[in-house]
Image (tube, rainbow over all chains, first blue to last red):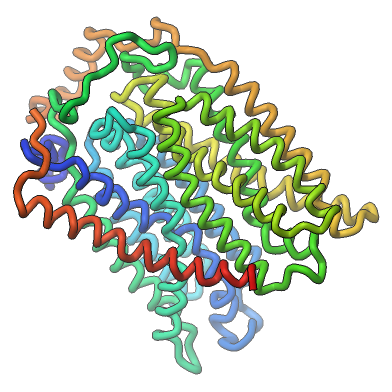
Length: 469
Length: 41
């Protein structure tokens, strides 16, 4: 990136007078775009009719083939976040946001070519691989910057950005439908043009974020903020190097905490519509079920901000205790709500569960910061995102296959989810134990001043110029 | 060290930045809320 010096970390250091409240909108510019991934399914049906236009024709793609686009994207999200985490951390947020914008928008443009040539492999490569790298880079790019700007409220700060990721589908879904309605003709579905338009719109939006983001000066601290004098047991004042962090039991315990929390939520989110209709036959219509899914998405988004902010006051460990204890009780309650036919209680249970599912994503960066310090928190967060990729596979598989098994063995559809609910409760109970086992990181993992000096010298040697110049 | 926004331009920048992300987000939330209300109809 030497050709583009304005992207360097040194060019993003805030001048005196810069308001830290400019940074959350910069982060939201990125997350409101990349969260579009949650709305990619709006393209599935139109993409099965690219040849037939009104209905699928021979040669048209089918839904299982198209489903791989999202799966590849999520796989590359986790992989790129883990692989490029250190580069993101050391290069600064603007460079990472710029690269994320290029990859994510480039993914749309390559996919438009794939639609135009009717070659699905190009779309796998475009939105899946390239776009997925944009997702990964974009997801972690503002995390450590926000934590450094808000040392007094790290949970709230990262919660705001990650709330944007949860809320992005609310914008992307109607926007995509509207664009397709503009570009479609009686002989053309309009997906390729919509991809191009979205690629351009998202690139511009993300570049605004990259332009306004700033990192605080090294000696900056919020006005009136005094770092705690007395050391807190689970909030370290030391930093842990990213590749040392992944050697600690704490990292893997938090990895399981995130994985189990996400597994319990993601499977249900994908099956919410069908589940509500099957558990309450005749009471929940197709339209009402769609409303239920929308409501869950709202709670998923709101929970990201709410729980992450709460964690600043009650602590990260206690917040996850709430998720796992309350989640276990709620999952065990769901079959009972079905047996008494109470739709309201059913909706209430899942609304709270979904808020905690979102809260799990949003609280984890601050948890990592507490355990491993701020220096490499973005890179460590990148490695942790692999837990999400894993949960993204296991969650839906658990829910779908157990349901199929139950129905195959003569269980009525209304009760086919009961065993799944108890298994989810069991997963959360395991998560509770993992969370319980988390203790402070041993001091042997803490970065020493001489380590930092060696790494700085290596960076100088690699760049050929003084670090931070 | 800190000097929070004291100038008018900074306040304007803040309004613009938050409006830039807030308006689309609120629009999207309202659209979703409208759909979610069908659950209670």
